[in-house]
Length: 176
View 1 (tube, rainbow, N blue to C red):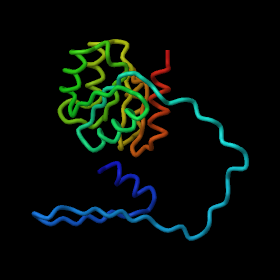
View 2 (view 1 turned 90 degrees about the horizontal axis):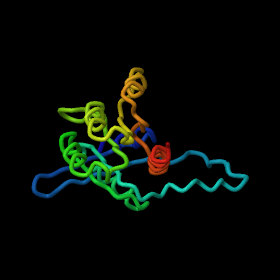
View 3 (view 1 turned 90 degrees about the vertical axis):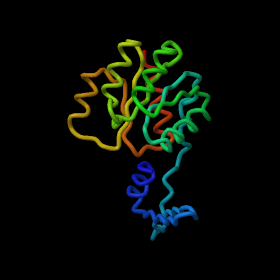
View 4 (view 1 turned 120 degrees about the vertical axis):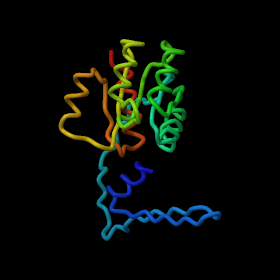
């Protein structure tokens, strides 16, 4: 829901939630109607994007299951093998069970108990050359420094769209 909220805010939209005990919930999204027509920006053919498909195994770690599901669906549609975990502890169990199978750890920073940085440090003890990408909706000036010090391979700020997610993951996996 935090991703949807962020997207709606960035587009000046509104979310209306109605819930009635025993009857369920209704969520309505309202986006503003453009007041003027948009100019045609494409005068030349757009470049063909580099392939973002893959066959690697990605371990997704997020305590918000709707976010995990969103990422899982996108990555599976591009050929990636997916493992998921709702906590750092669960992720470490999966990594210990199949360390060589996982090529990328993609984790939210804001996890309960052990955060994304702590998870990254523990994961590197199990598999020192594991590629790690973190994500968060909260960014501050110290984040870049912490990521550099922790040896994190990449970061993706929430909210993000499908093309950003796929491009960033492919770029990190392709890094030597």
